[in-house]
Amino acid sequence: MAAPKDIQFSCKCGTLKGTLRGAHPRSGTHAECFCADCRAAEIHLGQPDPAPNPVGIFQTTPDRIQLDAGHDKLAVFSFGEKNLLRWYASCCGAPLLNTMRTPKFAFVGIRTNRLDDTGPLGPIVGRGFIPVKGGKPKHEGLSYLILGMATRVIGSRLSGRWKQTPFFDTNTLTPVRDIQVLPKDTRASLLPKDS
Image (cartoon, rainbow, N blue to C red; front, side, top):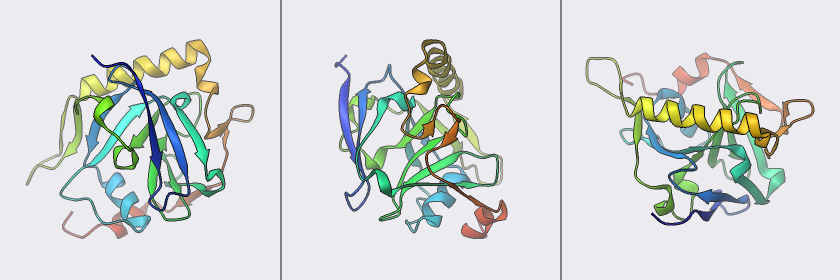
């Protein structure tokens, strides 16, 4: 197995740049998501609807994310008061990452299409909300995704690494940017009616 590798990432226009440090199958989980929230987030930010394709995500911990340039272009929104925080580049609308609403739950999902190289992430090991015609969405590798996330979150909490985050002030536990909270019905209005 190859050694962990630092991978550069950037927004669409290249103004906001950063590094995913130590990318490796043991440092995160390579996944795909078909959920309505991920689709609606792309559309809200002026990106094409990814459907029928998924949104690629590498789930890891915030201490592995380093912002190198364009810090002032980092922005965040959420569908409702309790949902994931969706971080993006305000300069070009590129979706970048998702986090929980508190730094104490040390989770980040970085969009794989923003990474310069996805090879070090390893194979895709889980897929969420896979559409099923006439039925409920299904999941593949869900237990692997949950176990990986739980292990990383607990490890970050016990070691104190949860405090190493570019997204939150860990003294006040608040995001470094004001959250644009969109009404819950915004998501439904963004998606085609047959979704």
